[in-house]
Amino acid sequence: MGDRTRVNARQATLAVLKVLQERTDETKPIHIPEIVEELKKPPYEIFTNRDTVKRILDDLRLDQFYPEVQCETLRRGCNGEWQDYTYGYWYKQPFVFWEAAPRFDERVKENVTFLRRVIRNNKKRRGRENTVSFHFGGYGSDGAVHPKKENRRINNVLPLRLCVAYGNPYLIGLFPGERDLAHFRVDLMTKLTEQSGPEERDERRRFTRSRLEMAKLNEYLASHLYMSFEKGALPQKTTLRISKKGWSDRPDASLTFLYDAFRGNWQTVREDEEMVEVQVECLERGIELFVWQYLDRVEVVGPKAVKEKVERALRERCEKYLDQ
Image: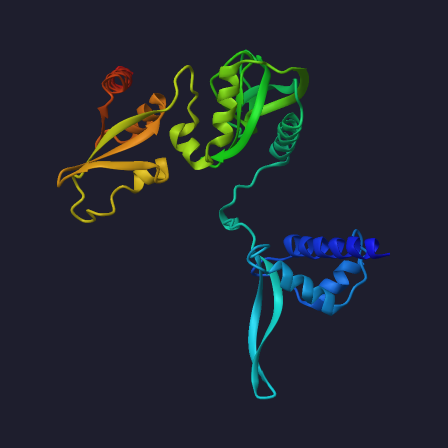
């Protein structure tokens, strides 16, 4: 009998926590009588009382357990003494700016759900892995996704991670036999299928997967600017020189464009009245695209090989544009 009591106590605690997590936030608190009524319903079907729920909430709110459980506190007098009275409980959800959250259509949702399942299942498997194949297209003048002219199917990509960049959903994955991370717009995928096969046992490939798992997403996006492919090269530290010409109206607030691209993932190396030098970690292709956007104020300082390669690519771009 005692065993059953302990199990029910654990179940009640977990149920209260789940109600808070799924039903509440700072704008939608819940009161103890409402929790008692919620616990009576499926899937919980737990019949308890207000005092028990109050004790559970007090335990959950301890700093060593769930400080995310919050409540309103009111001080009131009772027999000449002040006592704290708690009410209106909620779970402090991870902050999301819902007003700015991207909205995706049903096709994208289906693709993301499919890819999430494959990624999740692969984490549980040893010796085998599931890959995905798909057609990859682009948007036409009618605003719809169409296959490319060759309509070539992309086969056996190992899906590793999903993210949103520049307002679009992306899959980060590996081509079969490759060790460089590749990126695919999820909204451009059609006819997704899943295949099962033996795990590719390659130490450098395994290192690539570990590198991605350990990377913080904002740092990864900054080092793979504009979702550039790795293509045999890893991100490397590059120094950029940013001109202060035209900064007289706001000399301390003119790196917004740099922040927009690298989200603060840079180090200031040198600064004087005419320029700022910063060091970023990024793929060469990303650096090239970034400098192309800001030719009037950004130049590559080093390494020398990166500087020469980027300048050559930019010169070719300018000549091609002027020859049109």
